[in-house]
Length: 273
Image 1 (cartoon, rainbow, N blue to C red):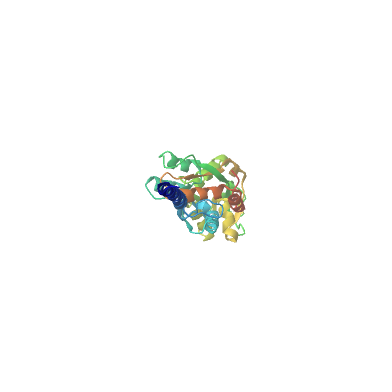
Image 2 (tube, rainbow, N blue to C red):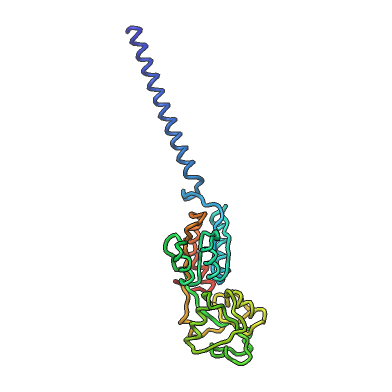
């Protein structure tokens, strides 16, 4: 074999080895780039959630959503759920006014419409629970309130939610159905405000949600009334268009609507959608 032939074969072997090395390096580089783009993953292989989820929610959801927020944070270490609770109309006005939020949970479709009509929601809202009214009285029900008509007793101090908020609109609908006209001692801006008046004995009774009566424990006594069936509120939830943490916000909404979330909500007295 001539020297030139041997030299040619050696060059070809080196070239082949170099090409193989380039292919291996390219595969490593491609694999590394894929891992970088996906970020940290959890045990299921899904990208890990992180950051803060800002949730604006109706005041009547305070206890159950706080529990769900704690549950969410345990399920997704590195996340935090920040809540703003209040009257749904006030929260809707804040959102349309530019307040930063990821999720809105309202106590009625009407107040959710204040947000969707301004195209501030990303997609259609979904009803996740319903709520029914009760009369909250002082412990032991000393004034023997047994119906809406009893709220018209002389000298009885009654508090209602403002008619612009869902609990107030529902209460007015129930009162209209019963034919009762009340002059409350005050109108409160959310259901917690109305309930607090009774808890502090500043009022004898208030028309609130049964979930709030349940959350108050022995601070008040609840009285059911048939007209409440005429004024059941649907609660819609929506991802907001300007959400800063979309993936985590979607995951929180999924928890609320899951069997796990429904168990917490129905345990608080909410009705299934």
